[in-house]
Image 1 (spheres, rainbow, N blue to C red):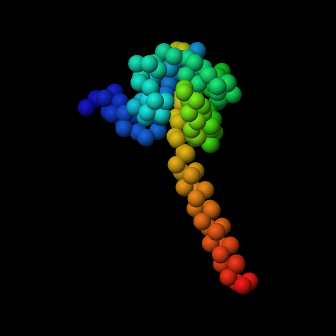
Image 2 (spheres, rainbow, N blue to C red; image 1 turned 30 degrees about the horizontal axis):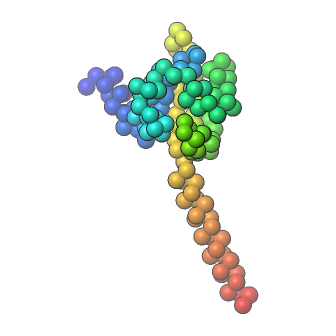
Image 3 (cartoon, rainbow, N blue to C red; image 1 turned 135 degrees about the vertical axis):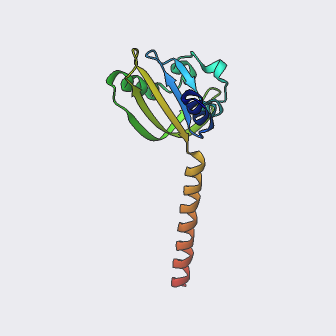
Length: 140
């Protein structure tokens, strides 16, 4: 297996959504996890401007452009994204400018964390309930 096929195989099997953008923030690549996250096929997504894909996310897309222009990567946790159709999700995002190209590009990684956040909230609620029950028994 050559290097390109190996890399394609890895990207295709990640649970993390991976996308690349050109200097105009048009989608150049999206892996299968990205297609699942955005609920659209690569045929629909490729070539689209991120501002068209996520029209209600001006602040997020502005940060992408700022990272591309500055050449500085960033990570942001628990970003609320509004997807086409109005569905909201929470993701951790990492943005990395790719500067070794003739034209600047951007790498975007999105990891959906809604399930993890819900589990953490439920565990905290259970812990608080148990403490309250224990505290209630002590004073009774």
